[in-house]
Length: 490
Ligand code: NAD
Image (cartoon, rainbow, N blue to C red):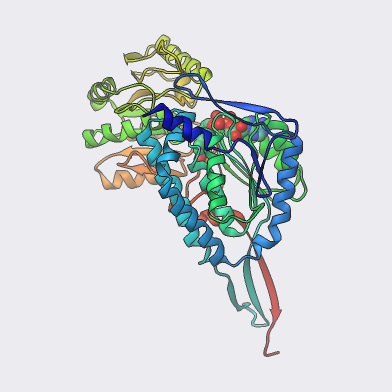
């Protein structure tokens, strides 16, 4: 990867706030540094929005709403389709940009462009197919009409781990439904959203339909927007504690909310599983995005008769991983997002080992520039270890043995989270029992990755509210009206 290409790409990313179709500096001239986590270097300075800027973005979204809501669905669909096409043309730029600001290996960043783009295509298709209902009431005295309407201006808050896909997963259904939005990306990885806003502009986005505020002052800026009486919907993806705080703020305006929060996914391997498949699925479910995914398998619950062999095989594969800057050929493990993430991974591993877990490989921060942590495997993790309770968000695979199906279910459900679970078994009836018994909003049965734009993505328990993607996704941005009319025959 040539430095010139990186420099030119970074220079082509807008550095302003995108408000009302225009790029502008922060009202107080403040800027925010964006770093490359693989080197620690500052790669770009961008505008750091103030509370006033947040209010201006809200004004723009509110002003643009009536016209956008009245725009025919086909036109909204075509805008999203043009955006999808442009994204395919700019795929390499988006992939490199995500690798630079977030650290994921380039091959995975390309995968995210594919996944993120599918939300544009999927919702461009969904919007023209929305329908209502018309029919007699049961008494025969009237006619019932049910119609769907865009909820209004929305506030969308996204995390740093999937900078493009988390933005398109919200923006595409909102825009498809006829809503206008203010988007606030994470301060750690704001460049991809700015670059995407430019793409939308090039695709013909009308002014004010999508507005972007980048800021280090997430709390105050968000509070002002959420407290605005014109806002109708808050969609958040991030950690559970921040989601809980935002739900309290949203209560004041009785806002519609979608909350995609943290996870603690169990990955259950039964003794009848195809072990090669289970190992391949485990590596995907654990190490994709350097372990920094809400869907990352957090606890590997493996039947005691195969636990040792499973640990041996995953360790062998993990020891062959190449760690480095995501732009380098062959690298599969990039840096973690920051120092705090490295410290957390270290603490969780050390605590588990102190409690009796066996460290099979890795276990430490890597002494080099950037924020790297070794790909790690722990086996025989003891009940009560922090690593089984907390979201690891790093490249650490923790194995817990079990003996009976009931025990596997008990361990898997022993968490306040309920986003996704993974199960490996060749027994169909057992697989079906697990679908019914595991308390998660999503499940991978003999597969290690479940994300798909056509699927209703979302969690149970503390993992969230609402669904993104699938036929359900657009309804998060629509509200229902029921009208009763008199029987036209008297
Ligand atoms: P985070 O909660 O720290 O931040 C998420 C977003 O909220 C960022 O934009 C951040 O700037 C903003 N934010 C932080 N404090 C805020 C406040 N007080 N008011 C308003 N906004 C605020 O989470 P993160 O570290 O960026 O992301 C990792 C977390 O996200 C993990 O828990 C992960 O599981 C979760 N996640 C969930 C999903 C899902 O679909 N369920 C997807 C990706 C990530």
